[in-house]
Length: 237
Image (cartoon, rainbow, N blue to C red; front, side):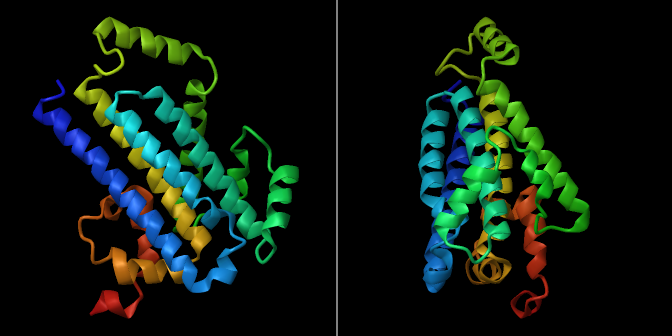
């Protein structure tokens, strides 16, 4: 299975998704230094190093056939970015210490319902869809954070098929790639939103648009977010 064309193609896809995601995170971090005093107090920007650690770990887990742990880590990333971007906007202009105290006092733990207070930087038609998908992703991933029948049933089925750790099927890897890509798509939209449309627009025009192989040009929500910059002169020449 490991040496099959399908498996190797999916493994390459996983590495390409990870590479593009890391490149985007690093680019946002680098671009933020152009306005360091502004971004010193942004939770979304401060989170980049934490996200990078998770992303590197997730690729290692993929390569070693460890899937449930990935779902738990993706849940954490979705929850973290949702809450950070909301706090950044509610407490816009405040110091980091004020934001972290607000996070502690007013943002509920182990819940994603606060997403209902969020206005994604997307079209009106996509806003509700985005928020619904964030909640759907979070709550389905909870089945792999807490002991659950769903998790046990999945493990039993995998054992019956011989898909124990390191012996996953090509389809299992393909499904995992879809899940990771879906999560990274939503995380990037919130990170771009935290970064701000002005700086994110510069990033698209000056860097991402020229990289035709960048995987997220074809993602569901980043592709939609990118339309915010169609008015720019560089895209109309």
